[in-house]
Amino acid sequence: MVFDPFEPNAQPIVHTLSDDLADIYCDINEGLLEIGNQAPVSSGTIWEWKFGLEIHWGRHAVNAISALHALLFGEFAVK
Image (tube, rainbow, N blue to C red; front, side, top):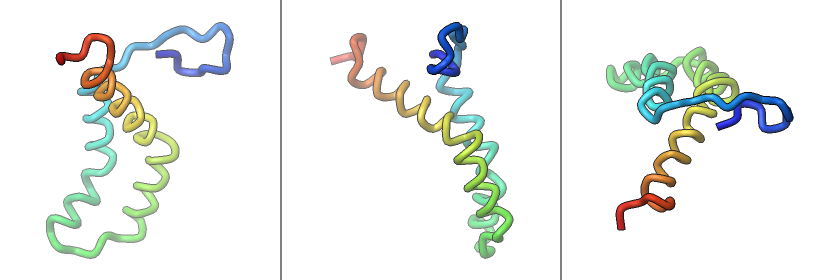
């Protein structure tokens, strides 16, 4: 994967599916705990989720979907 696809000299970086899923979980866990406790989700938590989706864990979600798609339907998928 190339972190900045618009930078001609960008260096490839390595990610794992487990790292992507762990980052997503860590970023949304607090709100999930609020829901689990049947408490209303606070506006602060909603803001954190929105901000995280745009700035951090949204990219991890895209990477995770890409990895799962490659696993299921890619060149080396088990048929």
